[in-house]
Amino acid sequence: MSQFKSLFKRLEKKRIEGLGGVPPAPFLLSWRPWRLGVLKQEIRIAKTPRTPRLIPSSLFPSTLLNKLFILLIVVLLVPTAVAQETDPGVTLDDVNAIAGKLYCPVCPNETLDSCRTAACAQWREEIRVQLVAGRTEDQIIADFVTRYGERVVDTPLNATLRGLALYTPYALLALVAGVALFTLLRWGRKPSPPAPLPHGEGKQPAQTVQETPSPPLRQHRVGEGLGVRANDDSDDDYRARLERDLRQ
Amino acid sequence: MTDIDFLQDAAPQPERRRPRITPGTVVLLAGIALVALVVAMQLARQTRGPLESGSAPDFSITTYGGQPMALSDLRGQVVVVNFWASWCEPCKEEAPHLEAIWQTYRERGVVVLGIAWSDVEADTRAFIADFNLTYPNAPDIGTRIGDDYLIRAVPETYIIDRDGQVVERLIGSTRVNVTYLSGVIDRLLAG
Image (cartoon, rainbow over all chains, first blue to last red):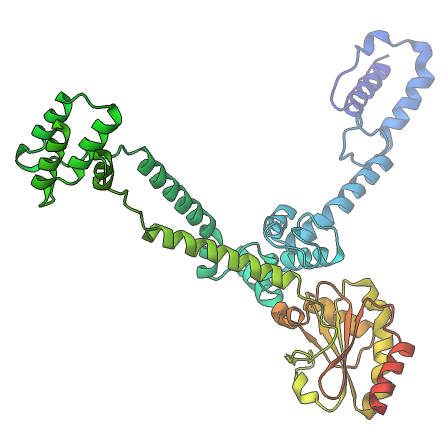
């Protein structure tokens, strides 16, 4: 009996190991003598040397599947590792960041990152190659301009031309706004009153005119004429003639 | 003369305002003229007709083999200038024909020049090797030659006579074959 018990204990230990260390339901309490054949078979299995499991048997009960899984991981990881060795830190986003600033040689107004032509694919690959070689964005763009002309960029690289291209529209806009503002201010300015007559001479004729029962048009014209001619030397003569005429 | 007449005579005439030219007006006019000039230049450039005839623009190149050449140095020979690129599918169709023309006529005063337009050098060299091209090929640095010849896309082929005049402009690869090119070249050599 004690031999059976020790066998069952070993068997239980093996079963627990086979289940990844999780103890099953109490085993010893459920054993029965008529299960001896089954127990012997289980003991035989337990004594059979087994290959070590890298993956818990709860995930992959078969060791073959384990091996296939490991092989799959290796197959997937090796190219990535190789690519990382050749393209240190160069991603598709890095390439597209530069490609978005360059234009397709054949499609009008289409940047390299969105163009699907073979030419753009080649140029994107060229950008990637230069990034891998350690070139900066400015160096790559400058190289493209040297090789393919200014039309590959949206604005000229020359500082003067670039300034003209970027700021001329704004300068023109500011100029037009300035002229419009100046014109509006001039229109809104009130007309200046007529210059006052020297030595208060202007008051006397104005009073004279007001005393005279003249039509409004005449009164206005007289006053206006006097105001404008205030500095004229012939004012006195003119005024005398005017008063004399009005008295008649 | 009535009393009102002399008053009317005495009334001051409104002064005529002379149109004044202020600095602002000058600047505004200059700005408008500048914009008009730029627009006119762009329009003229866009509406400039293709180079169908007339004197062929001169250019200097350095071939992939390192040999410097200039079109003007080839005066007295018939020159076939072919603009191409490795990413251009029709260029692959016409390349063998151009090589055949070069092999047939190179001893009779005909030069075939390949100008790689907007191409990556490594791919250009691979293309030359793939098609076993032996005629001179060179990159169009800065696409200056293409701009002079108003190239919008490739392939384009120009046939230039012995006097440096453009005789034919072939767009695409349809007519760039041994039969057609031989006909044109024979005519030019005979003339």
